[in-house]
Length: 66
Image 1 (cartoon, rainbow, N blue to C red):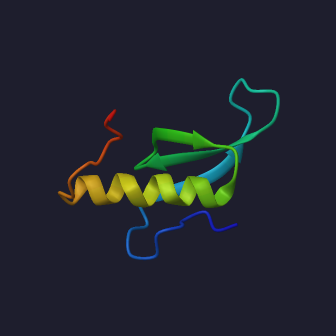
Image 2: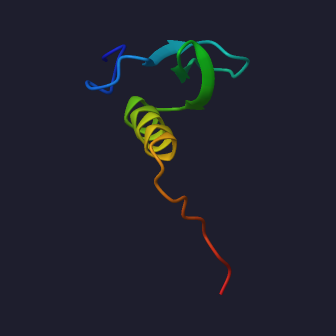
């Protein structure tokens, strides 16, 4: 597990911590500020990558009911 999952942006960190759930979760932080939590490391990396994309101006896609 890498503490800094985004090689080009070291401000993102992912750490395994207890946060009120029964099991520890992977916590995503940007500059020390909590962003999200995930059950698996790959999911946490995906959350960090998505957050970075939003910060860089990428549009946000959401599920729309049919």
